[in-house]
Length: 295
Image 1 (cartoon, rainbow, N blue to C red):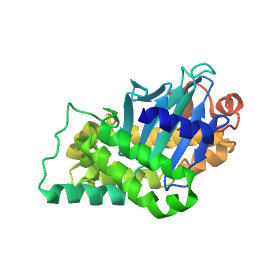
Image 2 (spheres, rainbow, N blue to C red):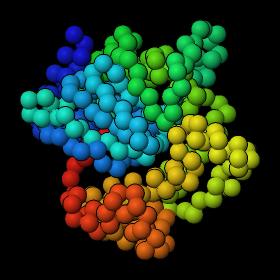
Image 3 (cartoon, helix red, strand yellow):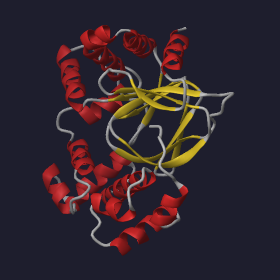
Image 4 (cartoon, rainbow, N blue to C red):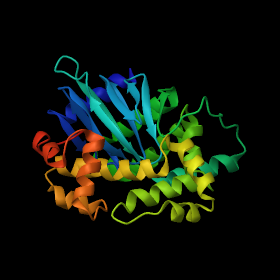
Protein backbone atom coordinates (compact mmCIF):
# COMPACT_ATOMS: atom_id res chain seq x y z
CA UNK A 1 0.00 0.00 0.00
CA UNK A 2 2.83 2.43 0.85
CA UNK A 3 4.42 1.98 -2.58
CA UNK A 4 1.09 2.74 -4.26
CA UNK A 5 0.80 6.00 -2.32
CA UNK A 6 4.41 6.93 -3.15
CA UNK A 7 3.73 6.28 -6.84
CA UNK A 8 0.63 8.47 -6.71
CA UNK A 9 2.66 11.28 -5.17
CA UNK A 10 5.25 11.03 -7.97
CA UNK A 11 2.60 10.78 -10.69
CA UNK A 12 0.98 13.98 -9.44
CA UNK A 13 4.38 15.70 -9.54
CA UNK A 14 5.59 14.30 -12.88
CA UNK A 15 3.21 14.87 -15.83
CA UNK A 16 6.04 14.16 -18.28
CA UNK A 17 9.34 12.24 -18.44
CA UNK A 18 12.45 13.54 -16.70
CA UNK A 19 13.65 14.39 -13.19
CA UNK A 20 12.25 16.95 -10.76
CA UNK A 21 13.35 18.43 -7.46
CA UNK A 22 11.15 17.72 -4.45
CA UNK A 23 12.21 20.61 -2.23
CA UNK A 24 13.86 18.09 0.11
CA UNK A 25 17.65 18.36 0.17
CA UNK A 26 19.20 15.84 -2.27
CA UNK A 27 15.91 14.13 -3.17
CA UNK A 28 14.58 14.02 -6.74
CA UNK A 29 11.77 12.06 -8.40
CA UNK A 30 11.84 10.75 -11.95
CA UNK A 31 9.66 9.22 -14.63
CA UNK A 32 10.36 7.45 -17.93
CA UNK A 33 7.89 6.06 -20.48
CA UNK A 34 10.40 5.15 -23.18
CA UNK A 35 13.25 2.66 -23.24
CA UNK A 36 16.66 4.26 -22.72
CA UNK A 37 19.69 2.01 -23.40
CA UNK A 38 22.37 1.89 -20.74
CA UNK A 39 24.76 4.83 -21.20
CA UNK A 40 27.81 6.12 -19.27
CA UNK A 41 26.98 7.82 -15.98
CA UNK A 42 28.63 8.68 -12.69
CA UNK A 43 26.72 7.84 -9.54
CA UNK A 44 27.54 10.00 -6.55
CA UNK A 45 26.73 8.47 -3.12
CA UNK A 46 23.03 7.70 -3.40
CA UNK A 47 20.09 5.37 -3.04
CA UNK A 48 17.73 4.84 -5.98
CA UNK A 49 14.28 3.43 -5.23
CA UNK A 50 11.86 2.27 -7.96
CA UNK A 51 8.13 2.18 -7.22
CA UNK A 52 6.98 1.16 -10.71
CA UNK A 53 8.79 -0.41 -13.66
CA UNK A 54 12.44 -1.42 -13.69
CA UNK A 55 15.92 0.05 -14.07
CA UNK A 56 19.36 -1.30 -14.94
CA UNK A 57 22.81 -0.29 -13.74
CA UNK A 58 26.06 -1.85 -14.97
CA UNK A 59 29.33 -1.71 -13.05
CA UNK A 60 32.44 -3.33 -14.53
CA UNK A 61 30.33 -5.65 -16.68
CA UNK A 62 28.03 -6.78 -13.87
CA UNK A 63 24.36 -6.02 -14.53
CA UNK A 64 22.11 -4.96 -11.65
CA UNK A 65 18.44 -5.03 -12.66
CA UNK A 66 16.03 -3.82 -10.01
CA UNK A 67 12.40 -2.81 -9.52
CA UNK A 68 10.04 -2.10 -6.64
CA UNK A 69 11.24 -5.14 -4.69
CA UNK A 70 14.81 -3.86 -4.27
CA UNK A 71 16.51 -0.48 -4.07
CA UNK A 72 20.04 0.31 -5.20
CA UNK A 73 22.61 1.56 -2.68
CA UNK A 74 25.77 3.25 -3.98
CA UNK A 75 27.70 4.67 -0.99
CA UNK A 76 30.74 5.85 -3.00
CA UNK A 77 31.10 7.67 -6.34
CA UNK A 78 31.07 5.05 -9.11
CA UNK A 79 31.49 5.12 -12.92
CA UNK A 80 28.58 3.06 -14.25
CA UNK A 81 26.28 2.60 -17.20
CA UNK A 82 22.59 3.12 -16.48
CA UNK A 83 19.34 2.98 -18.41
CA UNK A 84 15.67 2.11 -18.47
CA UNK A 85 15.54 -0.66 -21.11
CA UNK A 86 12.03 -1.87 -20.21
CA UNK A 87 10.22 1.48 -19.81
CA UNK A 88 7.20 2.13 -22.05
CA UNK A 89 3.89 4.03 -21.90
CA UNK A 90 2.27 0.76 -20.82
CA UNK A 91 5.01 0.08 -18.24
CA UNK A 92 6.14 3.49 -16.97
CA UNK A 93 9.10 3.89 -14.65
CA UNK A 94 8.63 5.95 -11.48
CA UNK A 95 11.37 6.33 -8.92
CA UNK A 96 13.19 8.41 -6.32
CA UNK A 97 16.86 9.43 -6.24
CA UNK A 98 18.18 10.11 -2.72
CA UNK A 99 21.65 11.65 -2.44
CA UNK A 100 23.54 10.39 0.61
CA UNK A 101 25.15 13.18 2.64
CA UNK A 102 28.53 11.74 3.77
CA UNK A 103 28.63 13.89 6.91
CA UNK A 104 25.20 12.76 8.11
CA UNK A 105 25.78 9.13 7.13
CA UNK A 106 29.07 9.11 9.06
CA UNK A 107 27.40 10.75 12.06
CA UNK A 108 24.65 8.11 12.11
CA UNK A 109 27.14 5.28 11.66
CA UNK A 110 29.13 6.48 14.66
CA UNK A 111 25.97 6.90 16.74
CA UNK A 112 24.87 3.36 15.87
CA UNK A 113 28.26 1.99 16.91
CA UNK A 114 28.19 3.97 20.17
CA UNK A 115 24.66 2.89 21.05
CA UNK A 116 25.74 -0.67 21.79
CA UNK A 117 22.71 -2.05 19.94
CA UNK A 118 23.06 -5.12 17.75
CA UNK A 119 23.92 -4.08 14.19
CA UNK A 120 23.19 -6.58 11.38
CA UNK A 121 26.28 -7.99 9.68
CA UNK A 122 26.81 -7.87 5.94
CA UNK A 123 25.20 -10.59 3.83
CA UNK A 124 27.58 -11.70 1.11
CA UNK A 125 30.30 -9.50 -0.37
CA UNK A 126 29.07 -6.45 -2.28
CA UNK A 127 31.46 -4.23 -4.23
CA UNK A 128 30.74 -0.77 -5.56
CA UNK A 129 26.95 -1.01 -5.44
CA UNK A 130 24.43 -3.31 -3.83
CA UNK A 131 20.72 -4.10 -4.14
CA UNK A 132 18.73 -4.30 -0.92
CA UNK A 133 15.20 -5.47 -0.15
CA UNK A 134 12.51 -2.89 0.63
CA UNK A 135 11.93 -3.67 4.29
CA UNK A 136 9.20 -2.09 6.43
CA UNK A 137 11.58 0.46 7.96
CA UNK A 138 12.78 1.73 4.59
CA UNK A 139 9.29 1.76 3.08
CA UNK A 140 7.68 3.62 5.98
CA UNK A 141 10.51 6.18 6.21
CA UNK A 142 10.40 6.83 2.45
CA UNK A 143 6.61 7.30 2.50
CA UNK A 144 6.85 9.76 5.39
CA UNK A 145 9.53 11.70 3.51
CA UNK A 146 7.57 11.84 0.25
CA UNK A 147 4.38 12.97 2.00
CA UNK A 148 6.16 16.21 2.90
CA UNK A 149 5.96 17.27 -0.75
CA UNK A 150 2.33 18.28 -0.27
CA UNK A 151 3.36 21.21 1.94
CA UNK A 152 6.34 23.54 1.45
CA UNK A 153 6.11 24.47 5.13
CA UNK A 154 6.25 20.79 6.21
CA UNK A 155 9.16 20.25 3.85
CA UNK A 156 11.13 23.18 5.25
CA UNK A 157 10.47 22.29 8.89
CA UNK A 158 10.53 18.47 8.84
CA UNK A 159 12.63 17.65 5.74
CA UNK A 160 15.97 17.17 7.47
CA UNK A 161 14.44 15.07 10.26
CA UNK A 162 12.59 12.77 7.84
CA UNK A 163 15.72 12.45 5.70
CA UNK A 164 17.71 11.44 8.77
CA UNK A 165 15.05 8.83 9.53
CA UNK A 166 15.40 7.40 6.03
CA UNK A 167 19.21 7.31 6.27
CA UNK A 168 18.88 5.41 9.54
CA UNK A 169 16.52 2.89 7.89
CA UNK A 170 19.09 2.37 5.10
CA UNK A 171 21.89 1.80 7.62
CA UNK A 172 19.73 -0.75 9.45
CA UNK A 173 18.61 -2.56 6.28
CA UNK A 174 20.17 -5.18 4.03
CA UNK A 175 22.63 -2.69 2.57
CA UNK A 176 23.42 -1.23 5.99
CA UNK A 177 26.68 -3.05 6.68
CA UNK A 178 27.85 -2.29 3.13
CA UNK A 179 27.04 1.41 3.57
CA UNK A 180 28.59 1.60 7.04
CA UNK A 181 31.87 0.30 5.62
CA UNK A 182 31.97 3.34 3.33
CA UNK A 183 30.90 5.90 5.92
CA UNK A 184 32.56 4.45 9.00
CA UNK A 185 35.73 5.95 10.48
CA UNK A 186 39.03 4.94 8.96
CA UNK A 187 37.77 4.05 5.48
CA UNK A 188 40.72 5.32 3.48
CA UNK A 189 39.42 3.88 0.19
CA UNK A 190 36.15 5.84 0.46
CA UNK A 191 38.15 9.01 1.14
CA UNK A 192 40.34 8.32 -1.92
CA UNK A 193 37.27 7.88 -4.11
CA UNK A 194 35.78 11.13 -2.81
CA UNK A 195 39.04 12.93 -3.65
CA UNK A 196 39.12 11.46 -7.16
CA UNK A 197 35.52 12.40 -7.92
CA UNK A 198 36.13 16.08 -7.04
CA UNK A 199 39.56 16.41 -8.72
CA UNK A 200 39.12 14.83 -12.14
CA UNK A 201 40.80 17.79 -13.82
CA UNK A 202 44.06 17.18 -11.91
CA UNK A 203 46.85 14.75 -12.78
CA UNK A 204 46.33 12.00 -10.21
CA UNK A 205 49.16 9.66 -9.25
CA UNK A 206 48.32 6.23 -7.86
CA UNK A 207 51.41 6.52 -5.64
CA UNK A 208 50.09 9.80 -4.22
CA UNK A 209 46.65 8.25 -3.65
CA UNK A 210 48.23 5.32 -1.80
CA UNK A 211 50.39 7.67 0.25
CA UNK A 212 47.37 9.76 1.30
CA UNK A 213 45.57 6.54 2.26
CA UNK A 214 48.52 5.48 4.39
CA UNK A 215 49.12 2.28 2.43
CA UNK A 216 51.75 0.78 0.19
CA UNK A 217 50.91 0.82 -3.52
CA UNK A 218 50.29 -2.95 -3.53
CA UNK A 219 47.97 -2.90 -0.50
CA UNK A 220 46.12 0.17 -1.80
CA UNK A 221 45.61 -1.50 -5.18
CA UNK A 222 44.22 -4.67 -3.58
CA UNK A 223 41.88 -2.88 -1.17
CA UNK A 224 40.69 -0.46 -3.85
CA UNK A 225 39.75 -3.29 -6.20
CA UNK A 226 38.01 -5.15 -3.37
CA UNK A 227 35.83 -2.11 -2.74
CA UNK A 228 35.06 -1.09 -6.32
CA UNK A 229 35.77 -4.10 -8.64
CA UNK A 230 38.15 -1.76 -10.54
CA UNK A 231 41.85 -1.07 -10.18
CA UNK A 232 42.71 2.53 -9.22
CA UNK A 233 43.89 3.25 -12.79
CA UNK A 234 40.72 1.76 -14.31
CA UNK A 235 38.56 3.68 -11.85
CA UNK A 236 40.15 7.07 -12.56
CA UNK A 237 39.97 6.52 -16.32
CA UNK A 238 36.33 5.38 -16.16
CA UNK A 239 35.34 8.34 -14.00
CA UNK A 240 36.99 10.76 -16.42
CA UNK A 241 35.60 9.24 -19.61
CA UNK A 242 32.09 8.67 -18.22
CA UNK A 243 31.98 12.26 -17.00
CA UNK A 244 33.20 13.52 -20.37
CA UNK A 245 30.61 11.40 -22.21
CA UNK A 246 27.84 12.89 -20.08
CA UNK A 247 29.10 16.43 -20.69
CA UNK A 248 29.29 15.87 -24.46
CA UNK A 249 25.78 14.38 -24.48
CA UNK A 250 24.67 17.49 -22.58
CA UNK A 251 25.98 19.80 -25.30
CA UNK A 252 29.57 20.57 -24.25
CA UNK A 253 32.19 20.57 -27.01
CA UNK A 254 34.63 17.67 -27.20
CA UNK A 255 37.65 19.84 -26.40
CA UNK A 256 35.95 21.45 -23.39
CA UNK A 257 34.84 18.07 -22.04
CA UNK A 258 38.37 16.67 -22.39
CA UNK A 259 39.88 19.61 -20.51
CA UNK A 260 37.37 19.49 -17.65
CA UNK A 261 38.32 15.88 -16.87
CA UNK A 262 42.07 16.40 -16.98
CA UNK A 263 43.10 15.45 -20.53
CA UNK A 264 45.87 17.63 -21.94
CA UNK A 265 46.21 15.72 -25.21
CA UNK A 266 43.12 15.73 -27.47
CA UNK A 267 44.44 12.73 -29.41
CA UNK A 268 44.93 10.69 -26.25
CA UNK A 269 41.41 11.59 -25.12
CA UNK A 270 39.95 10.52 -28.46
CA UNK A 271 41.86 7.21 -28.45
CA UNK A 272 40.83 6.29 -24.94
CA UNK A 273 37.25 7.44 -25.47
CA UNK A 274 36.89 5.31 -28.62
CA UNK A 275 38.51 2.33 -26.90
CA UNK A 276 35.96 2.50 -24.07
CA UNK A 277 32.78 3.45 -25.96
CA UNK A 278 33.41 2.13 -29.47
CA UNK A 279 33.09 5.49 -31.22
CA UNK A 280 34.93 8.80 -31.32
CA UNK A 281 33.86 11.66 -29.03
CA UNK A 282 32.52 13.54 -32.05
CA UNK A 283 30.48 10.54 -33.20
CA UNK A 284 29.20 10.19 -29.65
CA UNK A 285 28.10 13.82 -29.59
CA UNK A 286 26.32 13.48 -32.94
CA UNK A 287 24.39 10.42 -31.74
CA UNK A 288 23.56 11.68 -28.25
CA UNK A 289 21.93 15.07 -28.62
CA UNK A 290 21.47 17.20 -25.51
CA UNK A 291 18.69 15.67 -23.48
CA UNK A 292 17.39 15.43 -19.92
CA UNK A 293 18.76 12.22 -18.48
CA UNK A 294 17.73 10.00 -15.60
CA UNK A 295 19.90 8.96 -12.67
